[in-house]
Image (cartoon, rainbow, N blue to C red; front, side, top):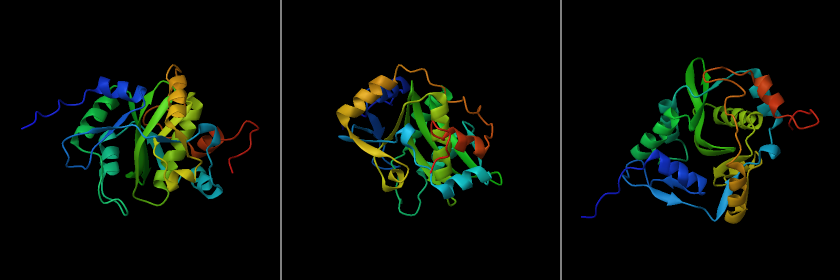
Length: 228
């Protein structure tokens, strides 16, 4: 019988991200992880984020209460849960363990979207320098994950981040301006982002509810116009 690979250490995971590599599992039940480095990398340019008018109205309405870094376990559980069109998941017990450790170190961040004190959407990802690596998101109510993404992008822009890595390009992310870039181009952007001292909590501290109007204003272009 082959020896089982030792548990993934948080420091090794951070070094992997700094090298452009990230882990996944075959399924929630799979005990092992494998490393991924796509030939084409999905990124969402922070200066080219497209915020549709209808979604901007939803964000401004504060129908959802949005916070960060208050409940990692609930967010990753939501991301791992089956959903329409996604019956399986790549988030296994090892992923939950090692990202949970990085959350406690302040290297993983969450965005929580609540309505009537009930968690209805959110996302989580890894922070290194001026780069944020989006891992997964979920939604239990219309627009909940979209609102989480809008809040994330505004927070990254205010905090001085220059790279939002989405790993892969999906039709959903493309609607917001996400693109694919070759691996070599991605590596150059990553290398430029890592030395930057960006701040994730500049738009609001953990647990603080940030008004939607402030979020939309943070996404205005240099001439002060609202996003289209």
